Structure formats: structure tokens, C-alpha cells
Length: 265
Image 1 (cartoon, helix red, strand yellow):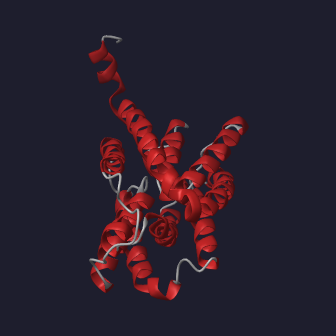
Image 2: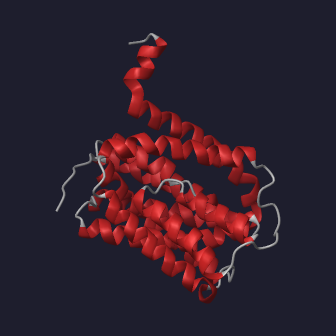
């Protein structure tokens, strides 16, 4: 069992960070872009930060999923294969990440965050309305569920955005409908990844539960906006968050080199 102490003041900060992340994540994913760096800033190792992030993320993704299912935006019967492939992918990714060196994660995360932000920035018309579907059945489940689920189990930040993009580009759903379906797969991969992290003893429970409560509240507020105003809020929010978080992650990884290049150190 792993122990990691966080001060009461830091727990309060993490709670409100989780509220904000849950709100953002319910709109179009990307909440992990906020929570993972903040967890790393507390002094957690990447493995512990990703594991604890999976626990707290379950609060937001499950909250949003229940909202969309109750509103009948998502039909679970139609998503059974996608859910299964997502679970398999996420547990595989979570198993592998526990055997990867921390330095590798620190190097790759900034690049992935930058790619997400650029994609949303350079595709302003993406998901404005429903379009023709490109993939069906198992091929779609392998790509949107298996591959993105693996990414979510292995890395995590921005996975919700990748799920949404898969539904937009491959299913032809509009962005609001894609976001609703993305939440169900995101909840599945969060639970699958969390299971493996629990078995590996990487979860910091106290911190995770506090943030889970914040995620639940934030996601419930954000979910109400998805079907009405989500289109207007998604793009600028993801682009800004991606830019800020990628800059922070790059500085965390190469801070000394950057300061030296700027002549500060």
C-alpha cells in the first residue's frame, strides 16, 4: 500500500481544481490536462499521479455518463462492443504504464497535449453537424474503444477529446452528441485503468476521493451545457488549456534547459 501525505490546504486546492477539470472534461474532454500536472506538482511520481487521477476522474465521467443516459442521448445497448473494447484497451494500457520509466512519461505527455490543442485549433468546422458515418461495428470499436482506451489507460490526459474526435470523424456525430458518447467510453476506460492501478497499489486514496467529489460536482454542471451551449465553449477552452498545460509540462521536463536558453540560468 502506498502512502502520500497532502496538506489540508492542498486538498482544498485539489478539490476546486477537480471541480474545474470535471466541468471542462464534461464538455469535450481534457480535464486530465489540468489534474495530472497539478498532481505531479504535489510531488507524486508520474505513476502515482496517473493512478490517483484515474480514481478522481471516475467521479466526473460516471456523473456525465449517467446524465446523458438518463436524457436518452446515449443508448447503452448500441455501445456494448465499444465499451468492451475500451475496457480491454484501458486495462492493457494501465498494466503497461506501471513498467515504463517515469522519464519516458514526462517526455511524451507535452507532445500529446500540444497535438490535441493544434487539432482543435486547425479544425474549426469539425463537428458542427451530423455527417456520413465512415466506420461501423468492430473496426470502429477497435479504433475508438481499443486504441483510445489503451491511450487512456497508459497516459490519460486528453483521452476524452480523442473519444469525441473518434465519434465526430468516424461516426459522423455532431460535437455535442459525440461528447455525450465519449463520456460513456471515458467512464469505462477510467474504471478499467483504475482496476489495474489498484492491483498495482499505485492509488493515493485520500487525495483521490477528495478530488472525485469535486469532479462529480463539476461534471454535473458542465453536462447540462453540452447539449445546448457546448459547441461554443468546447474549442476555445480546449485550445487554451492545451497550450497552458503543454507549456507547463515542457517546463517541468526541460525547465533548466529552457532557462539556460533564455539566459536566466
